[in-house]
Amino acid sequence: MSETAAREVSTAENPWPVRTVARKIGDWIHRLGAVWVEGQVTQISARPGTGTAFLTLRDPAADVSMSVTCPMSLLRSLEPPPREGASVLVNARPAYFFGRGTLSLRASEIRMVGIGELLARIERLRRLLAAEGLFATERKRRLPFLPKGIGLITGRASAAERDVLVNAHARWPAARFRVINTAVQGALAVPEILDALSILERDKNVEVIVIARGGGSVEDLLPFSDEALCRAVSAARKPVISAIGHEPDTPLLDHVADVRCSTPTDAGKRVVPDVREESERVRQMRDRGRRALHGWVDTQRRLLDQLRSRPALADPLGPIDRRADEVEVQRQRGRREILSTLTREQTALTAARARLTALGPAATLERGYAVVQFSDAEGNLGVLRSVSEVSEGTEVRIRVGDGAVRAVVTAGSDRAEEG
Image: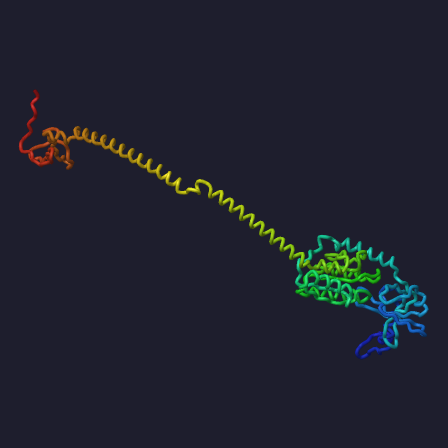
């Protein structure tokens, strides 16, 4: 490694002096060359008798600013002269001041951004946001009927704040507001409104947010067409009401917000219901409910009267008595039929019993006949039909009309003579 290269390396043993670091930073900055820069003028210092004017240029969408120097003649040549909050285009070269270690822009040309250019930029941004769906109706949320807390972002002690609060309290005296005052024009407006929106988003007692400002020029209302603010309102979890300017004023915030009000006064009327109107509506609904209830009761009473007038309900025991008489008649008829059937069957049974008695063996025995039975070799009792079936000494059973006796055969058999 050469001696020159060794000097270019910074180490703890070989540190660079401050002048070396400052020179190297200046070399890198000066390589950038001339650039066009757009921003908002937040401060102008042009003292009489001096040849240099000092301006502070701020990015409207971020908390970033830079110092700009220019010849006084360049500032005087501008028509109209720039004022704080104006948007400008600056052609400048970065300048690094070696002694103080500060950075600024040395302007060689300053152009005021005209109304036409501002409107064209707003229109381009409007088309971009519309293409992304940020203006879509289906993305918009409904306002709560009666929010328990209302967030209000507006200028300090402004007519817009007074209009919103006075009209809201006139409609609903118990409405609760949390007011956050911010800048509503100029370079600080967008960052402060974004911070206030974030605070109200985190507040659990706030259910709807109102962003309000009075009328003004296109430049005054420019913060409410800022892309960062529009995207923050679109991403908000709570409904947002836009009440910017007068009826003809339509910044992009009006398209992104969930509800667009033509004026702050209109926002005060839209954010809460009218207590008198709601009381009257409650009274009307109470009267309507009372009439409906009375009508229903009258209808049911007429229906009950009709039911009571029917014979079945007018004399509920009459049909039962009549049916009881019919049941008694049928019961008596059934009883007679049963007794007649029993008598007829009993007579038939007696006749059958008499026939059976006359034809049965008992009747024959009653006339003097007997039935002789003996036991065969197997011990079974059989009817004696022939004298040859028994021998002397055989025990027999003789059945007569009123009982049976036992006897023993004592003599040989005597056959009946055929004749």
